[in-house]
Each structure stands twice: as C-alpha cells, then as structure tokens.
Image (cartoon, rainbow, N blue to C red; front, side, top):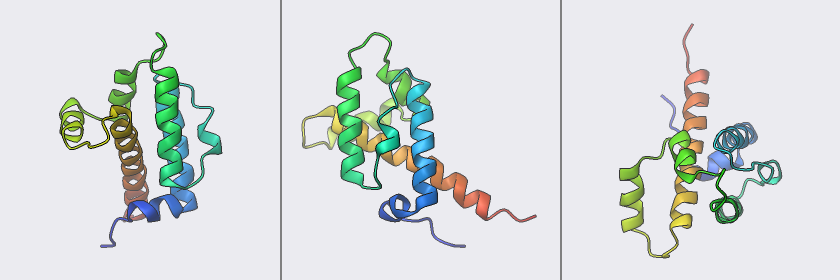
Length: 121
C-alpha cells in the first residue's frame, strides 16, 4: 500500500491542489463566506494560511458569515479546536483555525484521491 503524501507534497501536486481549492471554495460558499480569493491561491502553505486568516478576520463579524457553520461544514469539532487552542503560542485563534481548515480540507481531498486511485474493480 502506498503512503499518503505529506502536506508539502499535497500542495505541490497540481491535481490535489486544484481539488483543494475546489473543496475550499465549496465549503466557504456554503457557509456564506466569500470565496473569491481562492482562485488566486498559489500552492504555498504560508500564503494560503495568511489569506484564510485575512478572510476570516474581514468577514467573521458580518452577520451573514458564520464561523461555526464553516467549521462544522469542514468537519472541525469543538474538542479539536480546544486542543489546538491550548497548544497555541501565537495568541491569535484565527491562526489556529486557518491551520485546521487547511489541514482538514487537504485531508478530505487526499483521502478521496487516494481511495479513488486505489479502488479495485
């Protein structure tokens, strides 16, 4: 059985990165967060992280944007948030949330890709 790719490999794979952007846009749009920034993302973790933090800050206070709905949609649970917040040294919860969003969306995309490519007829 082949190993699942690392985070860096996931972002550098064009197919996985395109699927990541598609999934991220879908999750943001279905949670009433603007997703127009996603099309311009480059396969760079730090750049993606900064853009997501910026969008969460910019839109998180708007009544139509619901951060908890976004986290639920992406499948990030309260226990997971608490655990990550306790280990956070930055003091900015949006940094933790952005990190969890990137990792969870990539995880969903990679698992779909992995199992789709390893199905046996």
